[in-house]
Length: 215
Image (cartoon, rainbow, N blue to C red; front, side, top):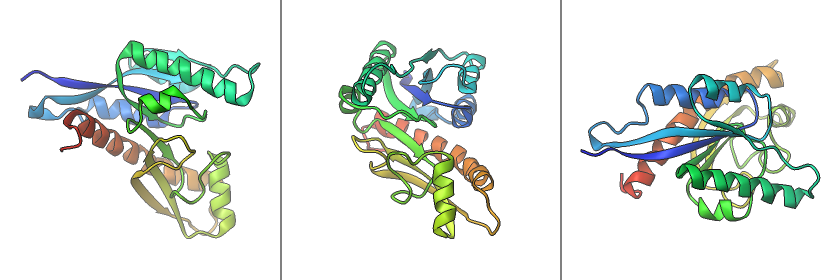
């Protein structure tokens, strides 16, 4: 049976622990459909920041990596569109079938969002729709959760749409908020769940894309 594969692009902005979880899952054969011949393969990584460790992770795994920084001389809407168009060009060159935001902090827009509607996923460090939206990322999310007195938090993988953290939810994993938690201790607990959720969501998406949602 001929193998059918979906090429995956991973978008990063920092240390890349979620990227590493995806790389490890692929190496372990978790993106392979076995006798079905369906599979997923990470073929490129794009960072919007130079010098982040995620780029080193890609290098060590032998995955082509690109730095596409925001153009600071442009207005905010223009720089988002410019970055989105550059990423779309890479997607077209690499025949990308699935885009995964793995700790990617830039907001994308325009033709890229339209071209990959239903084929872009993002992981967010809260139980959406709580603590999402523009400006809610990283430590800010965990600080807001602690300030609110919430008894649990977690992470969400969702489909990316034209909004910010507003697309359909695919997977959520929860953790308790413990007495004495800081933003760092809560983040560490959630990171462990993120590594599970992002891999499970990637497998789900690869299967759905290659089977036309008939799996």
